[in-house]
Image (tube, rainbow, N blue to C red; front, side, top):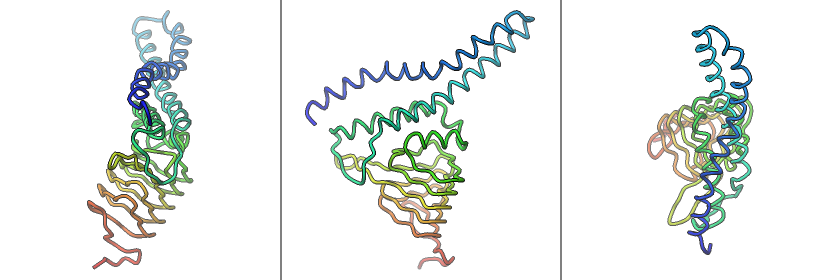
Length: 239
């Protein structure tokens, strides 16, 4: 991509005021609630006014946080690239799209860790483009590249696990969808790299690292760095 540095620097200059506007828009409902209801406590006794003001500020902050997360999800879903498996030059429009969507994810991280697992966190990931089945418990703020992530029904993502559908390798942005089958469990602080396919009912152990393009058969337990099968679906251990 010609003039990549110019485009990158221009977008960096524009992104700061743009993100300030996004944060400000998200704060609007909370500010409205504070201004609307504060007069009700302003004329009360001193300590009642202080208590009421604190509670209103608390409500305002929490509403701002939820709004910011959901708005970031919408914007990330609109800007993020929906691409199949492939390698793309770092100096490319795909990389710019990817970087923009990750910026919105970073903005969401102001509050997202406080909202997982919950229907709000799951809704954020859906708005960002992830395909998520029913009955899932997503206890992580680290599902990246949502448009390339498919999660089946009744999946559990353990605390602070990381799902990546991208990596940077040899000057290229490598993208490959991650597919997690029904009933799978991804352990806390584990990492799943791009292109991985995890079968139904499979378990990725705590702090395991699943290398790129790994296929985990249904019902198996994998663990370690790099992750390997430690128990087959029939309960036996590999030799």
